[in-house]
Length: 271
Image (cartoon, rainbow, N blue to C red; front, side, top):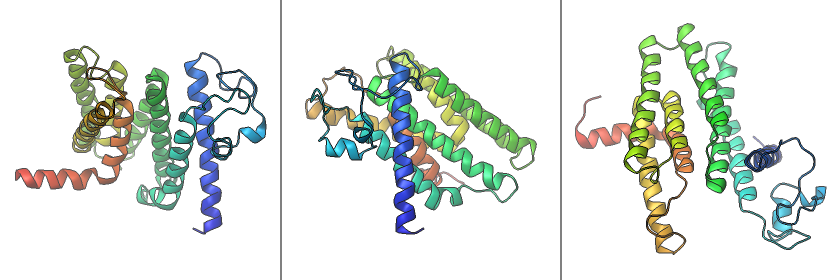
């Protein structure tokens, strides 16, 4: 893929990430993503097009509103960059790595995994910046995944025992995090995390789900320790766990099997 085409695709990803930001912000604040032009949440001034160019305007404005000079949330460049890099990676590598030979799944499967990636970015934006994991996003992602897995089983591409393995992983993931939510009384993880873990099981299957949960717990704990050390958080305060679950899902998709075999080898488990 040429350099110009790569930059073009990266730009498309930034635009898509900008739209995800609009969906996140407006959903949290209770109005439609389609409701008119963007505006500064601090001074309510409508934003001109030249101040609304994804990532570039943030840099040129030094991260501040042109009118009220208040800081622009890091939500905007973070989600835009995540989406742009996801789209670029998917086009260069992911759509080829996650492709079945059977028709029409040679087209459907890469599209499905792109939707999964975008859904995880959307959930990351909601939880990282607003502390919520909306049921409609989790439900939509779970429904799409369930239908996709079922279609693989019905067409014979996936064996029915494997189908039940994915379903069982979803139930087990939700049950495990539900137990954690009960034990910690919602301080260690919330019910949105429980529902997301169920969807993760449908996406990943049993072994990769175990890898994802382990990675999420370890990275979440490490982040909590670092935030306390730099005095951004105090002991006992919560941090959003959804972004760690979303990130660990991508890690498990890419390297879950290798991590599972490596860890199993350390324990002497047969495969």
